[in-house]
Image 1 (cartoon, rainbow, N blue to C red):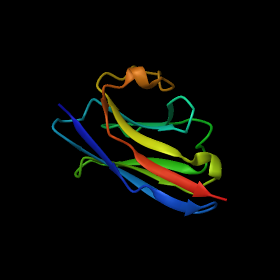
Image 2: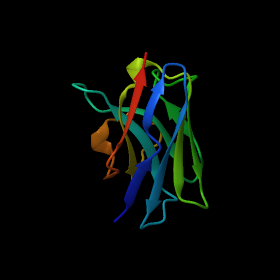
Image 3: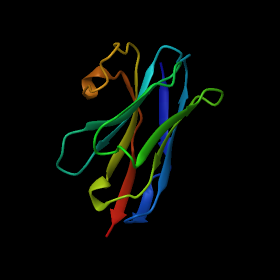
Image 4: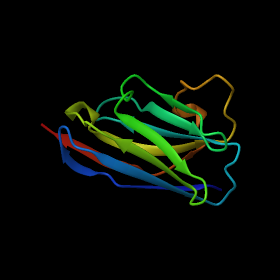
Amino acid sequence: QVQLVESGGGLVQAGGSLRLSCAASGRTFSSYAMGWFRQAAGKERELITAITWSGGNTYYADSGKGRFTISRDYAKNTVYLQMNILKPEDTAVYYCAADRNPRRGRWDVGPEEYDYWGQGTQVTVSS
């Protein structure tokens, strides 16, 4: 099994920044896609960004383009989400997830596509 542990969430003011980390263990991830999801109160869980572990190819949903950056440290088995210019509407629980079998050209997928999940970390942005 793969274990994913998120960290780095917290309370920030609008316009501030946070960096989330997702530490992975238990498997080799060379063929995986790693994604960040978020779920706001009363809303569905949505994919905001993803990266292929081996190639480093990235995808961003419109909500995070220009403000969020996903990256990975191959040696540390860690995926990061750098979030800048945070807005109150970014307030949500952020989840790290892993897809064992990513499909070529299919980035914009729902949570059902992903196989392993962290427990989430709360991000709260105050106005």
